Length: 269
Image 1 (spheres, rainbow, N blue to C red):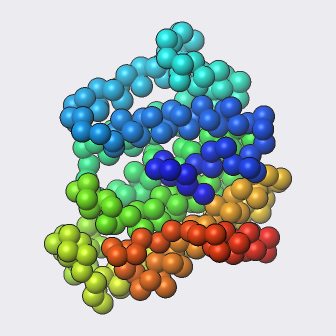
Image 2: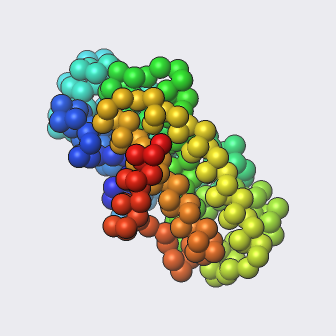
């Protein structure tokens, strides 16, 4: 399940084969550091975009087999060549991070899903390539799982994102259910809010379940890792529901008892 503030990345998991840990850590270091550039500190938007563009140039250097003075990109170049990883996945991540700098609202669900396709789905693609399991069916289901995880993170973090003046709930859905931005700012709970969140929870759950067959198809540790990821995401959705959709006062998160439940559910998949 997600670790720290870069979501959807099973870094250094106990289920991860030791031979793949250096590769996963190199990918994670790239993703987290780029995410920090886009989202942390008080740098100006111009500076953030400039630094992310420098990351893009480093990827171009990897593609050209040019050397880098950055230890981060030296490690990334090594694993991309060793495992023949698609550089487009890294470029997609940078595209999403750049979007985070300049985009704080999403007009509709297709626009939000397009963001998820670049902010979350590349992680799943890279993991499948590391395992040599990047078949069309596996990539399709991985995209569904990763996008669902990103949506779940948005639903549980509505209050946190508002503090950054961001809203990841589609604006047309807010309008359809009669929810104003001021209501989000005030953390106001009413039936309209609950109906809207119930719809979003159902949307994310259906997407997660549509890709969950991947966890049963993949063998060994990766399959078990993914089963826990799927069950963890579904459990967060359950907690949003049992909390009566109040994600302002009670941000849903997993505890020790939840992990026991996840392990049990994973074995029953």
